[in-house]
Length: 256
Ligand code: NDP
Image 1 (cartoon, rainbow, N blue to C red):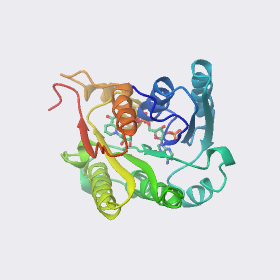
Image 2 (cartoon, protein in one colour; image 1 turned 60 degrees about the vertical axis):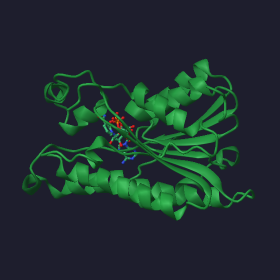
Image 3 (cartoon, rainbow, N blue to C red; image 1 turned 180 degrees about the horizontal axis):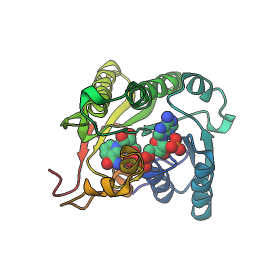
């Protein structure tokens, strides 16, 4: 791929595992010259390991691991201001951090799980977008940058037992569509990529650590890997400015 992202600064939320980590590695592999990566998540030690891995093979990439819980407004509020000068001019935001807690019928879902899913998947994504947009809008060339939201097939096709998670991802979809319309006259690109089943820690988190239950979800199919989604994310970010990969569903063959 042409190195269209040379010199750019990319923020990825939830970069400590799964799709977010794969995105970090894919940006670094395909755009190894003069790229800056800001990797965020709650597990700072894991982020530092990802940074070390990248610095091992991509000498031209600068990596900044930042501990950031997107469900905490105060952490997002101080995020941009705390960035070192050379990382401040963000060009791409990958809103990837997200989680699902429990598979249960709606009446049985506990309030704490509802709150954490909405705070992380919806409020966190919106607040990160609000934090980064002023950087895009204040550019002397009239405003430019990418927001890439990781939604889910669940936001399009709700399933029994996933009412809250599906609702959060439908909210992401709706927010993304509205934002694209609001910014239609600018050079800011609003992109949504919706994965189907991807084998990551996500599935184990969903079943509170029960791997046997998690693996059952993949019966009859070969789930995607985080790398499969990362390739699409980096492809979308790497298009020339007039091309918007606006809305993409990526799922494994055989997923019902
Ligand atoms: P993982 O569990 O592997 O990764 C989730 C990432 O989000 C981790 O890096 C985690 O980091 C981070 N995260 C979770 N909560 C927070 C928080 N409050 N603040 C900051 N970071 C947080 O799952 P995936 O890679 O699979 O998930 C990534 C995205 O893809 C999610 O939005 C998910 O909804 C979506 N998705 C996943 C699918 C799948 O089948 N796996 C299918 C469709 C969509 P840490 O714990 O260090 O904070």
